[in-house]
Image 1 (spheres, rainbow, N blue to C red):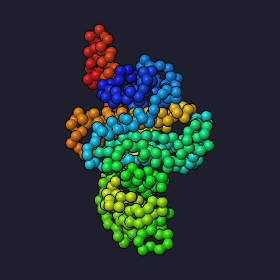
Image 2: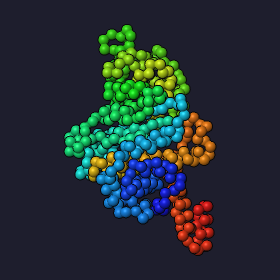
Image 3: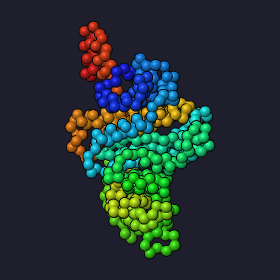
Image 4: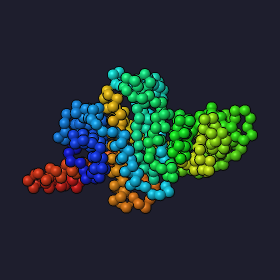
Length: 410
């Protein structure tokens, strides 16, 4: 693979506004590592450094991740708000999506590594749990932040205040600086349907949609005792009052049987519960929202946008090295995670620039970007073009220049 020299003009406008956050020595490291993540196939510090032409030794990149003075959260949020403002159209719904993922690590000396139950492999192992948050707006996923969960027994030694995953999720919601009149809907799975997260959403003046566990209870008007257990109540409600509806998710349209009830839920107050079952499936999902006026069809359709963060995590793990870090320090791990988010945002910038060149940026409500691997190939091509132009500029051999021009055209 060609090494990265001059930053392609295609992404200059992405990097330029972020330079104010860095000192002069740190700026080339940030820009180089993000570019290497965006075009590279392997994502350890050594492999990333090897892609950078005329760069310093890889240990300096490690020092940059650990010791340099810059606020990774501030940089990523500035990038996210920059992309959001570029896409903004009044009245379009805004989704803030929260989820977590796990990475297995065998290194015993790596900070904040702890024992966890790995859901994908269904076994206990050692690793990290990472909370992810993103904006989903007009079909575009914009990374907002990554938080490394630190267990209580490790927090004191790392001088990090202990916070549960739900408390981290509440902080992520509080960090989004959009005013209450923006149509923000916060989406999350059943783990985050709790008082901490619901209170954070309501304090911002927004709405949430989350999945309720089957053992939750809903007390509707006329119900006795502690209310109805959702595992039994859901099938009864769908059978008696459900209707079939065609609902569009991120890309496809499916038929769902949908019903709703309004009632009281412990620690959440008055909520609307929308029961849905996709045609051909046996499982019923209970979606809880604090927006009592939102139509049941829209509640299901909005919640299907939560899948955007699953795709973000998958793309970052497969193509950008979300779990490929081999650094020991807690600070270096956190910064690696943010650099991965920055690389994803850089590839999004490449896709949006291509759409703008084709005239699709302004006249479409929902934008569709190519897959991440195609965006990486487009950025590699831009790096290759810059390298060819640089060689042709300093060469005095006409035959070499003509050959390079043919390669560039090909």
